[in-house]
Image (cartoon, rainbow, N blue to C red):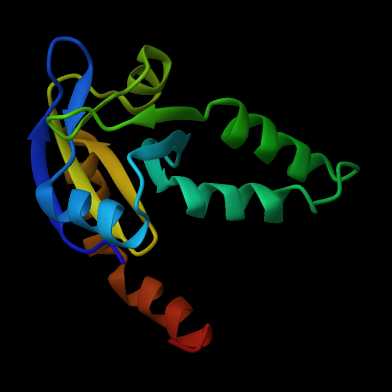
Length: 147
């Protein structure tokens, strides 16, 4: 599982270095340098290859006759890019995904269990402020889900 929060930068070529702890998990648990990156919730989501394949399998069972399902698949899966970690542990984020997430220089990489979230630093700061202001309501919703 991916845990923790790390600060990093996007280099001039659009590459992001994956933190050493996350790279260890990718190589030990998943034995792979391949990941998928896509857009979601004003940030990017990075999935190990096997987690992505499982997600695609689940999504393929969603009814294509449901309008919201079609919209989600168009948004989420059409933007996905397969990336590989280079020898320095970096991935090249396609320009379209960097633009969607507003990634320019400073980024935050978050461990989010089976995936990694990649946020623009300013957007992350705004998100944290919003979460802090709404933590009681969020906690109530989570408790209703049994956690």
